[in-house]
Amino acid sequence: MKKVFLLVFVFSMFFYVNAQRDLLLSGPMLGYLTMHETVVWLQTRGPAQVQIAYYPLDQLGKITDTLWSDKIKTCKQKAFTAHIKLDQIKHDTKYKYDVFINGKKIKLDFLTGFKTKPLWRYHTDAPDFKFAASSGTYVRDPEWDRPGTPYGGGYEIYRSVYKKHPDFVLWLGDNVYLRQNEWNSWTGMVYRYTHDRQLAQLQPLLANTFNYAIWDDHDYGPNNSDGSFPFKQMSLEVFKLFWANPSYGVDGHPGAITFFNWNDVDFFLLDNRYYRDPDLMKTDGYKTQLGRAQLEWLKKALTFSEASYKVVVMGGQFLNTAGVYETYTNYGFDKERQEIIDWIYKQKIYNVIFITGDRHHTEMSVLKKDGEPTIYDITLSPFNSRPNKHAVNEVNKLRLPGTLVTERNFGIIEFIGPGKDRKVNITVYDVKGNEIWNYTINQEHPEHKKH
Image 1: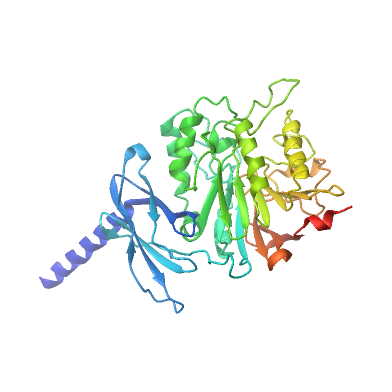
Image 2: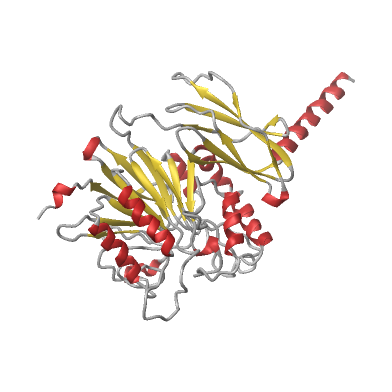
C-alpha cells in the first residue's frame, strides 16, 4: 500500500511540475541593460502571476543574496507577455536568475544569467565588448507558408551565436515574417510573434544575452510596406509587447526608434518604415525613409555624441551604390542619403558605422573622401531566411572586396583596445560558427584628416 501511495505521489508531482512549466510559453529573454536596471521578458500560456528571483554572485560564483522583482500579472490584452524590471542590480556583477509563475519556480533546460556593465568612466579605459548582429529570422509554419522550397532553415545558427558569448544581440529587422493573412489584424500579428518566439534553438541565446531590435518591412507589415500602412500603430504596439527596448520613438514621434550606450559606444536605432514614402511614389522633390523629425534627431544626436564610435542601425543598406531593391540609392531616396553624408562631413563626425540588414546577403561598404571622415556600412543578413544568391551581380562601387556573403550568416563585432587607439573587429560566421571573413577598422581622429 505504501508503494502504491509513493507511486501516486511521484506521478502527481511529475505532472504538477510539468503543468507549472507548461505555463511558460516562451522566454525568458533579457531586454535592455543600463547601470541601474535591466528587463526580463517572457510569455505565459494563459493568465498568470510572474516574478523573477535574481542572485548576485561573488568571484567564486557563489550566491550572496536573493533579490525579487515586482509581481506582474499577464493578460490576453497584452498577449500574456510581461516586461519584468530588475531594478536592484549593481555594476560589474554576475547574476543568476529564476522564473516564478504563480509562486512556483520554473525548471528550464538551460542556464539563465547575465553580467552587468563595469563602472569605468573616469577610472580606466573603456572595457572591450562584443555583440552579435544579423537580420532575417524565418520560422517555418507549414499551415501558413508559401508552397515550394522552405524559405527558412538552419536554426542551429542561433546555437552558434550563443556559443560566441556576445554581450548583446542586435536584431536588424525582419525578425519575424508576417504572412499575408496576418499583418491586417492584432490576432494575426500576435500569432506570428508568439509562434516564432517559441523556437527551441533561440531560448538559451535570448535568456543569457541582452537583446535590442529594430524592424523592417516583414515585421512591420506587408512586403515593402511604408508610412501609408494603415495598421502601423497596431504593429508598433505588438512590437513593443515582444521586444524590450529602452524606448520607442523620439521627440513625441512614435516608432521603433531608440538609443542606448554600451561602454564608450553610442547606438542609434532607426525606423525606416513608419515614416517612409512609398517606394514607387513619383516626385521631382525630396523623398524620405526616416521622416523629418527622426532625421533631425539623428543629425543632432550624432553631433552631440562624444562616443569613440557612433553606430547607426537601420533596416536597409545605406551606402550600397547599386540602386536596387530597398537600398538608399534606389527609388529616389538618394537625396536624404546624401543629406546624412553631408551632415557627417560638415560637422566632422568621425567614426560613424552603419549596421544594416534586409538584403539577404552580407557585405561591407566603405565611403572614403579626402579630408573627410570615413563612413562604414556593415550589412549583415540573413540569420536563417533564404539567402540572396543574386547579389554577386550587383555593382556596388563601395563594396570592400572579399566581404560579400550569400549564405546564412551572422556577425560578431568587437570594440577593443585602449583610449584613442580603439579598434573595431568584424568577423562574419556561417551557420555552424565557422569564420568566413574578418576585418579591422582603426579609429580616426580629426588630426588624421588634415590636408
